[in-house]
Length: 217
Image 1 (cartoon, rainbow, N blue to C red):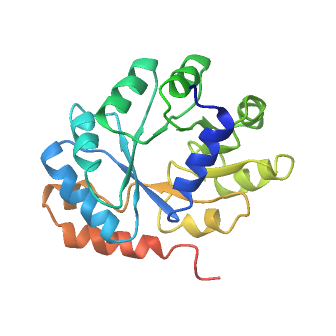
Image 2: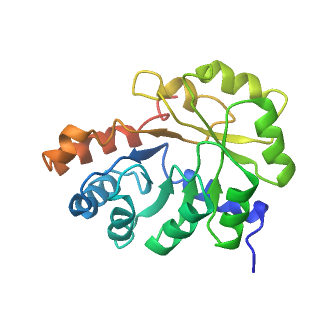
Image 3: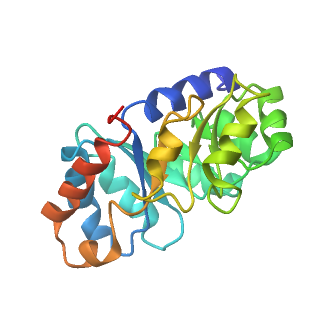
């Protein structure tokens, strides 16, 4: 049975609601994947986005899919083949920088809930017209940051966003304070330096701090 847009958005919303930050991960060595996922999940960030930007990405997804309590998704989905490969590797959701008809169709056919990217009101409206109301706002900072997300939310209150791209500890609260933002994607919780050093305790500490984001108020 083909996945409907409504069900896809419901499932991605459930995943996005697990924690205020979704780690955006660029993994060069799949041997580090399981320990990295365990550290992030232990720190309170169970939803993990592994970007398909490195040769190790699919193997990393396969390793992370075995970690208890984790929900591993594939990011940087561009083509239908990306979708099929991610699904085979064990991804439970997908994330894309934008959205095309072919990409959306592939995700629905493969039963892979998609968090599609949008940066303008027109892009958001087209996705809403198809039934998608949980979207990625990308590239967040380059597209106007939190003020832009807030402005789009005025005429389109039925859409919820996960801003990604340029989100950092310095500006994340400005996004999470908005009523149309459920979570944000960020890479700072798993910096390359700590991954290369296999400093899993350090990454768990960063994850724990990020998991407290948005709770101050």
